[in-house]
Length: 294
Image (cartoon, rainbow, N blue to C red; front, top):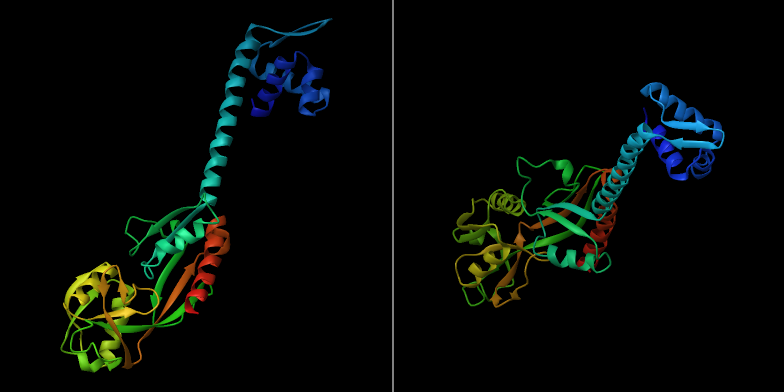
């Protein structure tokens, strides 16, 4: 017994004839007749009473029709549910955000302006152990080095500056060598974050290990502590909060030795693994950071 046979039988009952079912289904009349006979042979039951005036579904046939109709309704519901799921997945953007997290809400809002049904699944941290990397085909991160993968693209290169208190001892300077602050306390992101790894590397180039006096996972918190005079901090010039924002006021110095810069990189899965909106969001990010760099 197949779904195709049951569907043919349902049409016979609802149209009242072999001819009517064949017409609705676009099948030859002999094929419809064979399907019914095959069902009767398999079930060892007569489903239709035949007479000179035509056919009539009998009691056993009505039982089969009842379940065939339910199966048809369930199939229609299944197709609808799968189509809705397909549409939901097509409009979902799943991404790991390890860099430029301060800008990300603005980026999402801008993209949603032209894609009102978009849904974002964003992890603002390293991938948790229980999560599947395949569930997040986009990754935004920072590095000192250009990526080797063909699926990765450098979005922008930005200068890393040193944030100090505006009215502190370094507030009148506009540039500095990193070795000059080797004895000062740093406000920093946690050691697992990409920026922290990059800036630790530059400190080592300058000949010292940074003395971290406060760690956090929040960029705005870093800025507030520097503003209050509680240490200095490394600040990416493009993607972090500005010098004056929300009552926070810091002074940014260019680091001359060693020159401190980082790359913001977008890593993507293969195109066939991206949803419709993930592919469009990838292109949107590339254009967004081009505009930002200008």
